[in-house]
Length: 76
Image 1: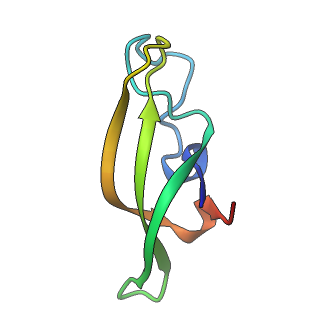
Image 2: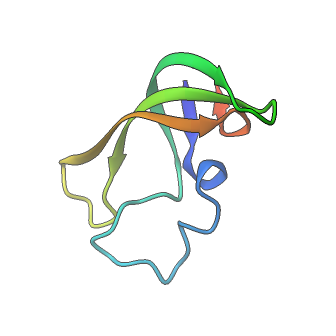
Protein backbone atom coordinates (compact mmCIF):
# COMPACT_ATOMS: atom_id res chain seq x y z
CA UNK A 1 0.00 0.00 0.00
CA UNK A 2 0.94 3.59 -0.51
CA UNK A 3 0.40 5.62 2.64
CA UNK A 4 -0.22 9.36 2.35
CA UNK A 5 1.17 10.57 5.66
CA UNK A 6 -0.37 14.03 5.11
CA UNK A 7 -3.83 12.45 5.12
CA UNK A 8 -3.07 9.93 7.86
CA UNK A 9 -1.65 12.59 10.20
CA UNK A 10 -3.13 15.95 9.11
CA UNK A 11 -1.24 18.99 10.37
CA UNK A 12 1.83 16.96 11.35
CA UNK A 13 3.96 17.96 8.35
CA UNK A 14 3.92 21.73 8.74
CA UNK A 15 6.83 24.03 7.93
CA UNK A 16 7.54 24.77 11.61
CA UNK A 17 8.50 21.15 12.21
CA UNK A 18 11.78 20.17 13.81
CA UNK A 19 14.57 19.54 11.26
CA UNK A 20 15.45 16.24 12.97
CA UNK A 21 11.82 15.10 13.28
CA UNK A 22 9.89 12.59 11.21
CA UNK A 23 9.00 13.69 7.67
CA UNK A 24 5.22 13.27 7.62
CA UNK A 25 4.71 15.49 4.58
CA UNK A 26 4.87 12.81 1.88
CA UNK A 27 3.54 9.51 0.57
CA UNK A 28 5.53 6.36 1.40
CA UNK A 29 5.17 2.64 0.72
CA UNK A 30 3.86 0.59 3.62
CA UNK A 31 3.68 -3.10 4.40
CA UNK A 32 -0.01 -3.97 4.49
CA UNK A 33 -1.27 -6.61 6.96
CA UNK A 34 -5.06 -6.46 7.01
CA UNK A 35 -8.21 -4.36 7.08
CA UNK A 36 -10.04 -3.79 10.36
CA UNK A 37 -13.27 -1.93 11.02
CA UNK A 38 -13.84 0.60 13.78
CA UNK A 39 -16.94 0.56 15.98
CA UNK A 40 -18.21 3.59 14.02
CA UNK A 41 -18.01 1.67 10.73
CA UNK A 42 -14.83 3.29 9.38
CA UNK A 43 -12.16 1.09 7.79
CA UNK A 44 -8.50 1.13 8.80
CA UNK A 45 -5.51 -0.61 7.27
CA UNK A 46 -3.00 -2.25 9.57
CA UNK A 47 0.31 -1.16 8.05
CA UNK A 48 4.01 -1.24 8.92
CA UNK A 49 5.67 2.07 8.07
CA UNK A 50 9.33 3.00 7.59
CA UNK A 51 9.09 6.76 8.08
CA UNK A 52 12.04 8.95 7.01
CA UNK A 53 13.46 11.77 9.09
CA UNK A 54 13.44 15.34 7.77
CA UNK A 55 17.21 15.74 8.13
CA UNK A 56 17.91 13.14 5.43
CA UNK A 57 19.55 10.48 7.60
CA UNK A 58 19.46 6.99 6.11
CA UNK A 59 17.81 5.28 9.08
CA UNK A 60 14.03 5.26 9.27
CA UNK A 61 11.59 5.15 12.15
CA UNK A 62 9.80 1.80 12.04
CA UNK A 63 6.16 1.98 13.09
CA UNK A 64 5.01 -1.64 13.20
CA UNK A 65 1.36 -2.55 12.55
CA UNK A 66 -0.17 0.91 12.83
CA UNK A 67 -3.83 1.73 12.22
CA UNK A 68 -4.10 4.03 9.21
CA UNK A 69 -7.45 5.44 8.03
CA UNK A 70 -8.55 4.00 4.70
CA UNK A 71 -8.69 7.45 3.04
CA UNK A 72 -4.88 7.69 3.47
CA UNK A 73 -4.20 4.38 1.66
CA UNK A 74 -4.06 3.31 -1.97
CA UNK A 75 -2.78 0.14 -3.67
CA UNK A 76 0.76 0.05 -5.06
